Length: 397
Ligand code: PMP
Ligand code: GLU
Image 1: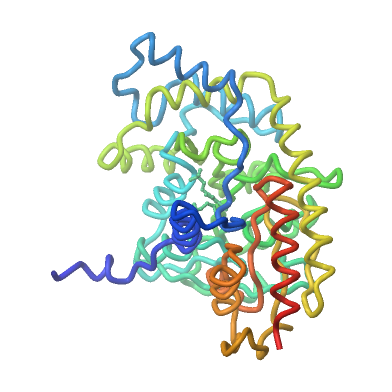
Image 2: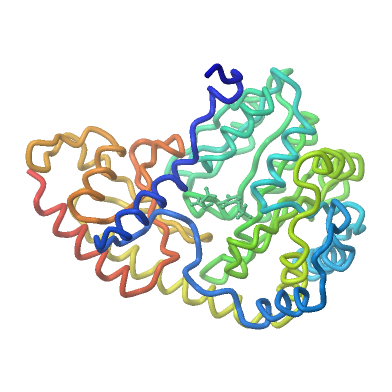
């Protein structure tokens, strides 16, 4: 069967496929410790589920406006005002089928073939593919542990070409967990304005920052940069609502309108009752969010200590999100049985097969020296995982 070039060029999401593989092994009775997908293990808080049940019982089961119900768009605006001191009109909010869909819509309406999008290494898997799907060209800004996996304004300025259109910023970041400070964002904003770029600011992990840090949205740094920002967020990570598929973009009016028009020919509105649940999430008590955040912070500390104790493995302390990104290149060249571990894919594969621990190889994020561990899993799993990895490393020759 002849497929379109566009389809032939797609690499399936490695985060989702490794998670599916781990779950399939689990279904066969193999006890897997799953550090792969970035999905909170908590259940969606009760009051949120109740809102969906009530909406269902009330017959709220029809098409809604394409960009979402007013109540939800207003709740997004109120949340941005409260948490990030941002002023938007509800007409600037487009509710989509998850933040991933919001990102997809944004790229489709902003990019022409040949346009360049700057991604910050290590980048989340879907950015790269979505840029390609829009016919545009992903360009990667390299970072290192030395800068806490953050780009610098000088680096950004030097990377811009006449074709560069968008910088994709993700703070707190997946996979490295880096969080940009207000000053760092202000310096980047200056370059974005000077070079006439747009910024897609993926703030899906905004509620998950640690050690007393604050999340700052680049859009909140002034009216000019706000006019150049497409802000992406959603309920998946903050409220443990990955399966509900509600995310959004908040954008300058013409961009929001184009995204809604595009969506009107693909998914139409996101699920009606999931939108009602999202309203309850945003307008109801935020206590569960803080409880989950604190628990994630404790898990981060425990898994970090476990990984840092491994010989030949180093790991930076992440500042947000729920991932650890240890450097395992010190294990490259060593053997497990007959198998030589040459790269992150080898390490992840052998870990899964021999120690039944699922992680994502760093190469999926453009950083082959690393593995990504999601600590959105229980503390028992974390303890067991640390033990298994310890034994695995001991057995390397
Ligand atoms: N952005 C980042 C950085 C993510 O890690 C995810 C995780 N799925 C998403 C966006 C998309 O989230 P969702 O589609 O579940 O809202
Ligand atoms: N964003 C999560 C992750 O990186 C969920 C999987 C996905 O959507 O790719 O693991």
